[in-house]
Image 1 (tube, helix red, strand yellow):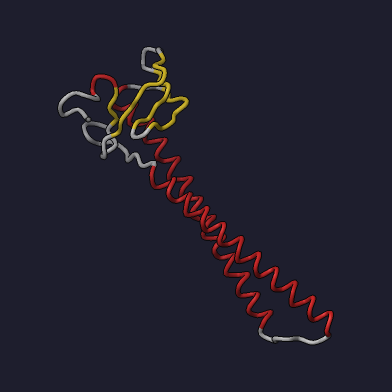
Image 2: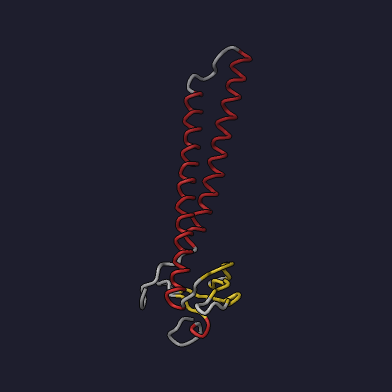
Length: 154
């Protein structure tokens, strides 16, 4: 990577996608739970009275259950996309830092607002504990004296 050829660093999309996954999982659990509850109630009524109060009910329950399964399937697929997106972003963080600063390892990475805070192993083998790294919109990492210089970031 040279000049402005950095990989995208996007931590917002995977996290947002995981929130959507959580909402879909709750909806799916509610829909599937409701279908199971309706089916048990219907079968209990049928056994107790010997008659079927609504011939279409079991078909409707089956459709409700499959709707819940479909919602759960979409949640699983989105969780996979979120996982791949987070993995790709972490790979881009490492490669962008290696390309600009020669960083050989990124450990204990966490986010503090717009900054990545991590332990960085530099090319000479020294470790910079709790280094703050800011990423430009194009993925260019800025740290140390580059953070507050004119035209060099913030």
